[in-house]
Amino acid sequence: MENEGRRKFLGVCVAGATAAAAVAAGYPVFRYLAPRSGQGGAAKLVIPVGELKEGDAKFFEFAGSSAVLIKTQSGELVALSAVCTHLGCIVQWVKEKQQFLCPCHGGQFSTDGTVLGGPPPRPLAKIPLTVTEGNITIG
Amino acid sequence: MIRKNTLAILLLASLAFLKPALAAPVEQPETVCIQCHGTLPDRLGAPVKLWRSSIHADNGISCNGCHGGDPKDAANAMTPQRGFLGAPKEKDIPGFCGRCHPGVYKDYLSSAHGRALGAGGPTCVTCHGNHQVVKASLALINEKSCTRCHSFDRARAIRDAMQQTEGYIDDISRRIADFQVSGVDTEKMGKSLFSVRNRFHTLFHDVDVARVKGESAAINKELGKLDAALKEIEQSHQKRRVAGGIAVGFMVLLALLFHLMKKSYD
Ligand code: FES
Image (cartoon, each protein chain N blue to C red):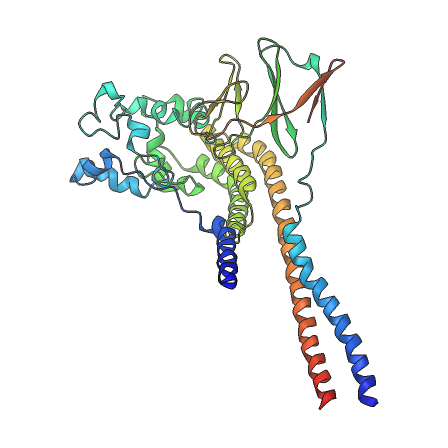
């Protein structure tokens, strides 16, 4: 009888300890698999259309890294990541050539982000934008 | 059989997780230039030996990356028709390196060093060497090197102004490398650091203490962001370790409880 009571008590303890061990072991696994905070969608950014002339570029911060908005000479608006796809330097706008130049190893990109020369393996990432009532909304 | 397959799948999956830690450096391409010059003595073979331990070799930039020519055709490798440029004359050296390093080339040209080009001023190779170019660091600014041309005072002031930020960069670089080895995705942070380090090192070429001090503030801010991101990962790892410790503790407790349970049946 006494043993029965003891076993019942031990059984409850085992159940509790198992649950606690499972939670404690599950937490690191969950943290490992869950995406890190701050990596989700970025806040949208609004830039007035008038801020940019044809052939000009405007650099800004977007989703924690450098980005650039260009108005091509034909008036088209394009937003791109300004992070070079080679080793990560920030590209510069060469207005006379209407293209981007990476100062680190000379990577060149066109206004739509295509690689024109140098070591970059991929085009500059495009960022979606919409134009409404004189405002450019990026993201 | 099923067991064996499961084991194989688990093994492969674990290998896939190990991949980032085992990423190999870029393989050095064995061009015809290396094949031939690698066996030549003295002046003609020495550059190959020096190049092998350079940052260019580490990143797969071979002879033709700078000197042009055809690295696949031994007979015509060094003909102008195949774009062979040979070695540049002293005054052409900055332009030669600047084809791939346009940012620092621009800074150099506007500096006192660059303005003295062709009039006894230093070129890229005066400080960085030519074939054995290594990753730039503040160690390049030293009394022995600078006093070949002028006093060390100004260079020392610049180096001292850069020292603290350089230490910060090195610390972040080491932490990123540690995380990379343990399989954390560090690509974005690594690229950011590369960019900041470049921006910082290029400052020196301006030879302007005031500019170094001014820009260092902005660069430290960028480094602060990386530092914060790394701290977040460090904290998360710490929490995971503590939770793992607690789990082990509860498992020990479970073993004890089972032992007591078993005893109650004796
Ligand atoms: S980082 Fe842009 S070309 Fe190397």
